[in-house]
Length: 240
Image (cartoon, rainbow, N blue to C red; front, side, top):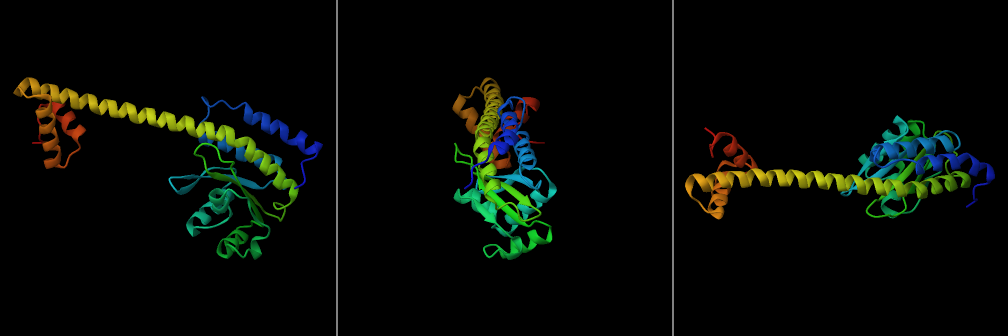
């Protein structure tokens, strides 16, 4: 693969520096990846469109796209269950479609891509880091994506971007877990409050009070926390 020359370095270094300056506290995962796709479009020849696919729970999703065409082509692959973006994301190897009009591996996708005006595609895996699995996808109208210069630039961009992408993913996962923990503590608090009222009102033990709430929950097909919240609010274990 031909390494980027000095002119390439001058062209892409500001883009990499821009990525390095992104603050995790000020940007969402989608915002960071949106910037990555915008920069890819800016520094690659022929002004292609770009997207980032991430596999979560086995299901692919496009978390950023620099244009509607990139998003549409990603969705076509998800619907068909195959294509370069899924190949790169699942295998960890680059997938190149030099000419969508004569693509033997994914002929149905190639036909649709050509009809939408996409001539060539390069999907490059995000380097494995933490639990992030995905690909950066570049869609070109003419047949330029497969050349060595473009591959070198996309490789560098993907390698550089995976750091902030992984950190943002882990940051948002931690925030989500904290929110779930807060909700769980809130649910536990209302259940404990209901138990306390039952214990005081009916002279029950903590275990007896909990079993009474659980029985009402089961018999009324209502979540335990909802039974507890209703009881605390109205004093009624069962709806009228």
